[in-house]
Length: 125
Image 1: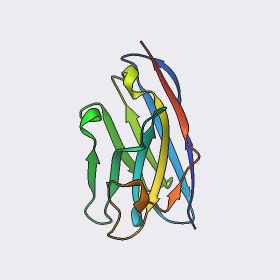
Image 2 (image 1 turned 180 degrees about the vertical axis):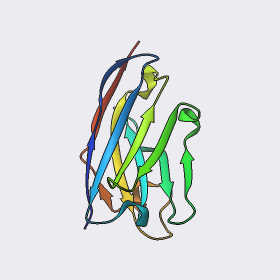
Image 3 (image 1 turned 90 degrees about the vertical axis):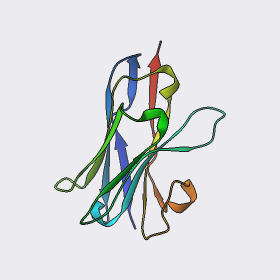
Image 4 (image 1 turned 135 degrees about the vertical axis):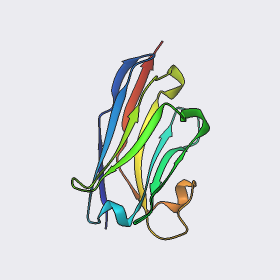
C-alpha cells in the first residue's frame, strides 16, 4: 500500500510560482511511476506531468505546461515535486499526486492505483 500526501498549494498571482510536494510512504518512489494530475471545476482530471523509470528516468509534460512546470524526484526524502512557474489563471485547479506500478501506467487516471487527497492551486489574474 502506498500513501501520498501533497503540500504546497495556495493562491498566487498570474506569473507567479508555486512548488507542490508529494510525500510517499509504503514504497520507494523510484519503483513507481509518479504523476501530477489536476482537475478544474466541470472538467476531467488531466495528467500534467509524469516521472517514471528506475535506472533511466523519463518525464512527460502536458503541452499546456511545457517550459513552465518541472517534475522532479527526491529519492532521499521519497518525494516527488512539481515546480510551477509563470502560472496562469487557467492553471487553477485541484492538483493530485498519483502513483502507479508496472508497465501499464500511462496518461490515464485509471492506470494509477494510489492518490493523494489533492491540494488547491488558485491563480488570480
